Length: 268
Image (cartoon, rainbow, N blue to C red; front, side, top):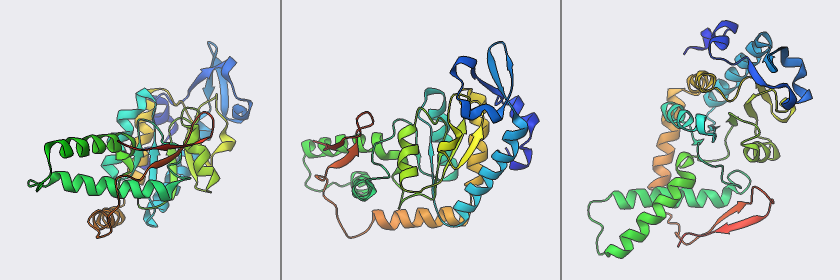
């Protein structure tokens, strides 16, 4: 869906104007609330429109400048859509669970990403040499675990230029880590959330599948800059085939989402 189609009418068709029940209201969202209907807040889409256009322009310029955008949406109705649109535009994504420390412990995560890419290449070889069946099973298990936690960001080459988030409350750890590092956050902000916690808030329903799909299509379009995407892909391939080897025995250091403690996770 082209960005030229960003309008109050198209946003209304997508159901972006439906907020939460009034008792869940965050006072910070008052400037963006138009009315109340049957106990539901109605978002003022005339205020959403310029903010949505500004956010998409920012993402476009970020990617044009050679930076990646991590697309984050782990809620049930967003997960598959995030994966599909992120892969369509060649951007990294998190659609299952945000791994604590993905950004704040990136140097450690980067080693795991390199090992993941090396492992994929190794297991794709038709001839695995003298590797025993048991060894292959162990490597397959490692690969599966790494793909589950890091598969969507396996081509992330450095800290991203921006993070796009579907649900500020569901994925608050992603927002917190990005903010701590000064990475701009673009996000849908429903009437129960605080728009002040992000750099580019988009007042919108963040639960309706149609609304999520509509905005993700705009995000994918904004992030589709072919020359940069090809350069990122080429860099990823070069890194994966590099001569420096990383041991699969290195642990993942991750922040506990509940307590904030640092955990060490190591595949067996």
